[in-house]
Amino acid sequence: MSTMVLVVPKGRGRVTGWREFLRVILVIMSIMVGIGSDHASSAEQADEVKTIRKTCGSCPDGYATTGVVDAPEVCKDGDSTLVQCVPLGASMLAVCGPCPDTYTEIGRSNVPARCGGKDGGLLSQCQSQQAGTTLPDPSQGGVVCPPNCGSMGVPGQGATPPPPKFRPAPETK
Image (cartoon, rainbow, N blue to C red; front, side):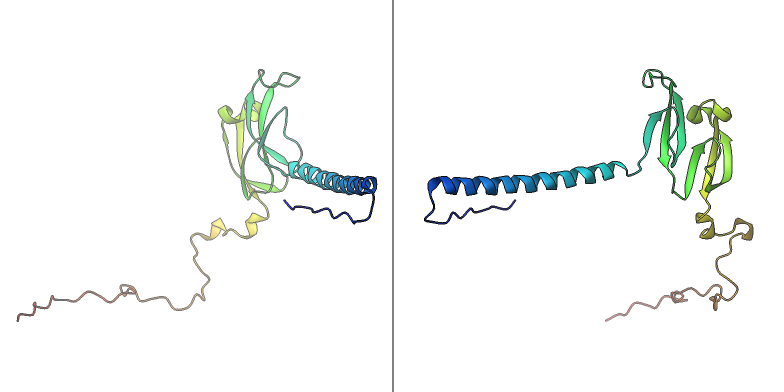
């Protein structure tokens, strides 16, 4: 926090000094109010950051449902379904029901304990379509590198020299 020093010019009357002092205080307060409103608007923007959340009913746009439970004690108005929502964007998601539009299903199972009775408790394993370009093709098997990987080492010849074949006799003095 900074300290402000108020310099009142000499030769002015006592009333004039107080008026200037009050003007300065009002200017400082108006600046502080302006700064405070900027912080309030940035706090509102911080609320827009997508995080994992739980809500009643269904997940909002931009989120995937990752858990479903019937909770009438929590969700008292209308739909008694409490859902866990995860923002879209991760490369892999396990979602209740079908995969979101930008994801490809790579596996599925029925887990009613996690996903409730909707769709028979379907839990889909989803992979982002953008992530598909960076992951290896599963049909290629365990290919480590292309055919022109360079020279491979001779089998049996590691990076360290082999141990001696016999142990030298200890030196005697």
